[in-house]
Image 1 (tube, rainbow, N blue to C red):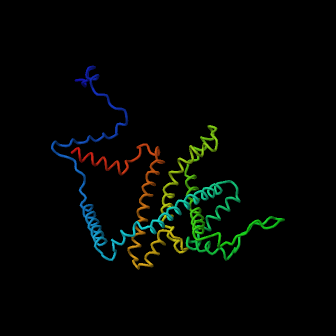
Image 2: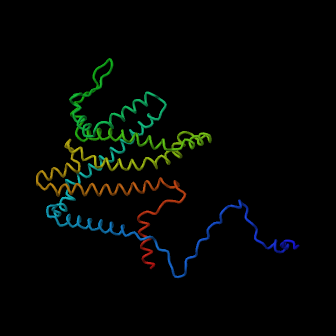
Image 3: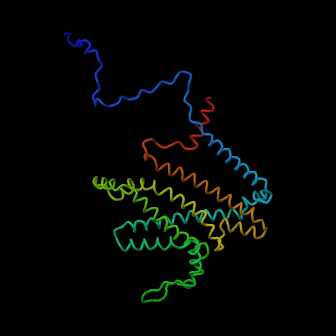
Length: 330
């Protein structure tokens, strides 16, 4: 009876080793090679081309309507776009936007700190301020402050056991411009407080505990750990609030403050060219908003450094330069 064949030592040594693992594990599929002369092409999506073509057609029709409609009176728009009265109103609008944003976020930061503190009185007062000024419309607040003289006809300072130091009539102290600043600032502070509070609370508490274990002071922790990370959460809504404040200043035209919109209204009340003057105000609002949006984009990009391991995506200018280099290289 013949014995079963036993592989020699040389055959056993040259045989490929069996990989460790369960015997029932399936083998990994081997990718098939692409035949020569064939290329992998992306999936065709004709719907994109159709929708893009329809969007371009609608845009072209809209531009043609805007450019060819004589009712817009584009020569009048060009004549008043840089007139002295319109530019004075624009400067006042920009000044109000900057002052209200700075004062609103300063007061909002104080309110956010009070809301995050351990003092229940400060927490309650901060919450009450935010609740009141977020619950009432901006126009109502402006009209209330404009008529505050009906409640307090005179503002004075008296000593407890002495005479009166000074007294001034409220209507003489609070003019339309100052009333607009007060009303807009208090309204802005209520929303800024929530933005700052949410940004501070977005920082991981573990990092604060690690900083405390290293013996870092509160000021250094705030500057080097809390603020750089909180700014990533604060900047997007803060930028939107800045743009909203710029457009919201048009509400103060009801107080006869000579902002951009009120200046345009004064002109078309005399010339009866309503549409051209409204277009002048619209173009200036669009131009300033676009500049603020670009600044917001680069500011957010600055504070986003190190947030992702992949690095920051290229800016639109960098993408445009890369496209030009590719086109020239071809």
